[in-house]
Amino acid sequence: MRFKRLTLATSVSVIAIAIWTGTTWSSQAETSIVPGSVNDPVVTKSYIDKQVADLVKAELGKQGVDQTKLQQTLDAFQKEMEQNQGGQKVEVVTVPVGKRLIAKDGAEFIVRAGKAAVYSADANGISDLTDGKDITNGKSVPNNHLILFPRGGRGVTTATGQTTGLTVMVRGGYELQTQQ
Image (tube, rainbow, N blue to C red):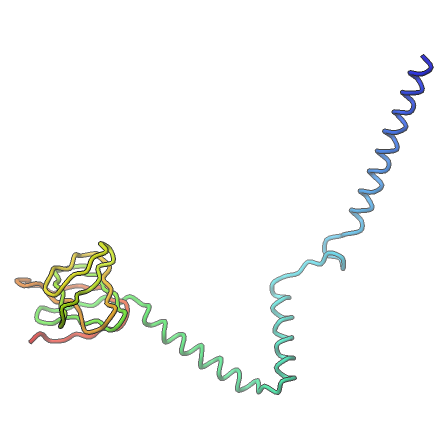
């Protein structure tokens, strides 16, 4: 009986010491790192942006870079980028009967209304990306298919017998020509 009491007392003591040790260490761990303190700072994007900008200005100043000239170069680059975005706009073009729509290099067309046929001065055609086919000169262009012109000088025209014009969505450079 005495052995059971001794075992019970030892077990209770060990458990009490373990609980006390666990709470002491965990409370010390929690108090050592407080969010927003020096040990665990809260950093925002605007703070990082400001620090990087200040560092870049300081470094450029050390290297003797003219800030005004650098800003002018950046402004010119931004203007050029905005002008290049114009090629990414989709423009709706009406092609009257008797005219053809000729693409520049890299242009894309989608025939939305009317019956169109391919115009090509050589044996090569145009790429129908929707069907994954090459459409040769004089063949019909399906409506609502994405057509790619890897090289300029090719285009679409109204199909033979068509009395109304075409409505074509165009992305990239193009020109309207009169058929001969």
